[in-house]
Amino acid sequence: MLRLLIVDPAGSGRAALRNALKELGIHASLEAMDAPGAFELLGERKLDGLICVLDMPEIDGVELTRRIRRGDNPRIDPALPVVLVVQEASPQRLFAARDAGVSELIAAPVQAKALGARLNAAILKPRPFIRCPVYVGPDRRRMAKEGYKGPFRREADWHAKIGR
Image (tube, rainbow, N blue to C red):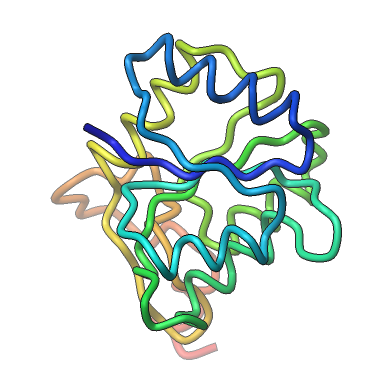
């Protein structure tokens, strides 16, 4: 049985996520109204994942994810799957979420089927977890092909290879 934490300042938002989880047969969820409350609960309990809205007062979902990934609280697993619920999906906001190490993104209003797919991808079939100086989180490459033998995929990789 999955144990998840729902974080949304709006009671109606938490209820909608709770109902979507119930449709998926997931009843063991905790709730928090904000990032500090979520951080506290995550430090106290072993959970399988976090479902968090992007827009919150004080600390948003992106910053909460950064703090989890950085290991600000040693009692929280930095590899905890994080599904971020986004109301307005501008490219800048999506890139910020991706770069913070969010496992999956989902657009609001959340539908149970879509949430199930994101939870499946984040928790049951996670991408490899990357730890490097500039990024901590799930591998951002979704289309990586095992055994790829072609040229470098990034221009910066190519320049590094040829010494530019």
